[in-house]
Length: 81
Image (cartoon, rainbow, N blue to C red; front, side):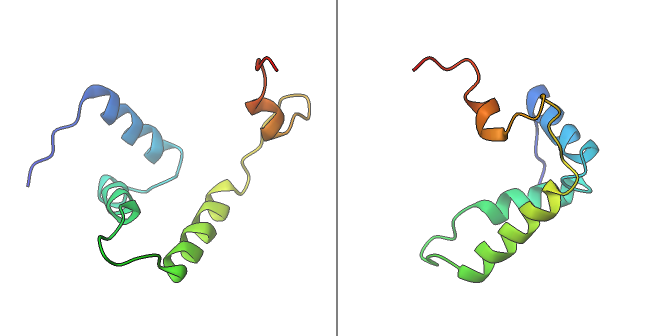
């Protein structure tokens, strides 16, 4: 099967590889397909646990240097209430 990506999709893929989120195009595609709901399969508690562990592993060492601002604070920057 051939898959054609738009330039913006190619950029996202290459950024994910450079950031270490995935190691290859194949792993990116496997991860994306794995994120799709398996029709009729319902919620898989074990897959959810593994996904959470993977997210925690990816986050290790990721820091925001915004004068000590939390992620929540950063997300709300510029919001008018």
